[in-house]
Amino acid sequence: MNVSRRHVPVLIIGSGIAGCTAALTLADAGYEVLIINAGTQLADGNSELAQGGIIYRADPDANGDINGSGKHEAGPNDDAQALEKDIFVAGHNYNYGKAVRFLCDQGPTCVDNVLIERAKVPFDRNEDGSFNLTREGGHSAPRILHCRDYSGRAMMDGLTAQVLAHPRITRLHRRAAIDLLTSHHHAKGSQLRYEVDNRCLGAYVLNEESGEPETILADWTVLATGGVGQVFLHSTNAQGCVGTGVSMAFRAGVSLANLEFMQFHPTALYEERSTRRSLITEAMRGEGARLLNHKGQAFMKDYDPRADLAPRDVVSQAMMDEMLHNGAPCLFLDVSGVQQDLPTRFPTVFQKCLEAGIDIRREPIPVVPAAHYFCGGVLTDVHGRTSMRGLYAIGECACTGLHGANRLASTSLLEALVWGVSCGKDLAHRLNAEDGLPQNLIASIPDWLHEGDERRDDPALVAQDWTNIRNTMWNYVGISRTDARLRRAFEDMRDLVRHIHDFYKHTRISRRLVDLFHGSQTAYVITQAAMRNRTSLGCHHRVD
Image (cartoon, rainbow, N blue to C red; front, side, top):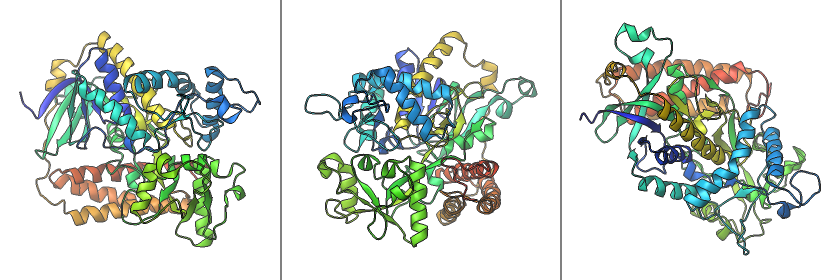
């Protein structure tokens, strides 16, 4: 068998909570699944970095009231309605109602079945054995399951163990997706181009071990490639989150949506030694921490009556206003109001700060906002189906409409889980009902052809291009935007994309070149979307 070319029933690109959950759901249904990622292990993306937790069911006794009615008794349906309201409020009512209801209805069952019963995730419990639920910004009640402040890692540990043990799941690491294969664009022979439906047929991927591209043909392809945060100067995202799925879908002509809505997390550790800023979980503010300005004054009540528990776009914009007004490089998070033992409740934050020379038991944490979660992406329905036949998208690279103009805290992991299950079930049904790719179509797809063989991917040139992208996006397409800033970003990114495209065509392919190509295109389409939307809403904050 030609190892650089293979045909599989299902290809899943990405191995976070969404990708792993979809793979397990499909494999349990009896289907062979190939899951690939660009890292060296499954837990190598944003999922494992999540600190706060995942939405479960509200505890009506923990805060006395889950819906503002003053009543202390509440069943699952009551909390579903309260959660819906919270999601719509955070999303500025720009959310897709069907997606919101789907998450609220399906969420608790998915958490029970996949994370608690199957993956055995050790969520924190109270002395009586009940789950210790916390509250985060924008939530009307404590309903967040967590494992200290490393919830994402705990969930990924449980899911990874299940994936590794499943005989129907094949894993390939150090495989960077280059491009989606489509019948209209890649099939040789004019007859196939006359077909009405353009179909996804798999992907070209770069095998970093051999340095050569591989052709992976698939009856069905699932994008689970994660976020886009690394196209901004300050980001909490994993290094590989450069918009791979968005970039490939855009080139393939797949529908995208809400690309202008980039959520900036209010609190990332302020230090200048890394391209990824360490996240300071929002749960700290949920448990009593307060933001202070450079004079040591609490300021959030001046911006919003919800103060430090306002939704993230409100807090991030208030922080930027405060820093710009006072010329301060950062603000501070005072954690003295947190009643629990800090090293025990927040061990990840405690250790990260200690490594930076900050003992949070004795001093406040210097913080800045950072690009955190992408509310837009590849447009999908409640099963993860995209506008292209043969292609699904789930997780952060997808836009289900759930988040609207701003994401409510701790909905992202639940969205990844719920849509992973839904996608897996829907795909299993279609695999059972439909035939795979016809042989003539498989044979019509050529292997990757190197357009250029020059080895010109000088690290210094690539680093400078990334510096241009990240600074342009942060300064012009960041937390606060104006027409002048966006037009400047559009002109700069248009010229840079042209330059990188030419560079890409004449240079032998490599991982750093693939990432740069995806990142530049993702930044460009985000900028275009931000220019088109002249209404200030949620994460898309137009100060003009």
